[in-house]
Image (cartoon, rainbow, N blue to C red; front, side, top):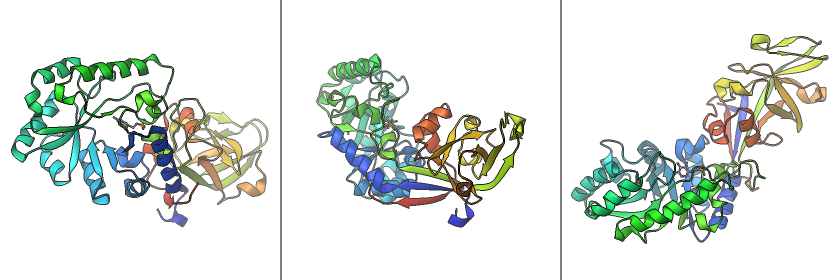
Length: 370
Ligand SMILES: *Cc1c(COP(=O)(O)O)cnc(C)c1O
């Protein structure tokens, strides 16, 4: 939406994004650092994020769906693009036309890609082993079946064997080591030709579990966008996303006045309540009502009452009057209100906050260095 016409401004700092890419690439080196940019680059806009990451040196990208791959291919003619979701029915020609390399998640995927590869010559793919998610990837029985029928791979070149961590954000969780050991074991029962194939294991959190988890290629997503890769610990990433809403109205009220739908909040002393132009229709979660904090000029202030569709109400009693006039901005995400804190208040994760960011914002992309 146009700057003047929007109730809230979303600022995405592509300079900080590039710094984050370089930080993760350094941390993971000598492993290659790819980028996970599914769901429109976690809601931040693939059209800007894809080329910015490419400019920072990224040459390999993961998306969920072939449609996302087609979009990205038009932006990045030379990048390697992987489709995490495998192969959707009757999409093989699209993969070829747009040079998309699928992640084969099951024997079903392998057979489908093998049948296609037979008619088209050698085709590339990644092979996903499931070491503890029970979600996507081959479990032990399927790996053994593959090892018994290695000619399935006659026309397929597997560039990487990969797996995915379920608990990487909790470094002390024993699942991390268990999955690592399972991955090492699974490698030994793969068809002989794949036992030395390069490996990809770590997402953002996995990069910070140490070099044992890096293997040959890492695939961070959330940390690129400023999300904290360690649950609870200090955040080593630069802030990429900032959301600021405009004050529409300020009301000075006496005590015991109800605020918002359901009268779920009542003022205690005399208070000043600011109404801010953002609501659940903009991805400001309803769960944040009576829970979250915003900030005005770095002074933290509580969201009081329920979140409405287009509006929240904030108790700005402790903010100097001149700083909270109609038209002034309130920080909703970023600055004094870290993304991870907003997610915690909404009882969710930063991934869901970012991918829910609404379409009514004025979106501004900065390439400022950090
Ligand atoms: C989304 C995803 C990633 C990136 O995970 P982050 O936690 O955002 O770093 C990596 N690998 C797979 C398979 C994914 O689905």
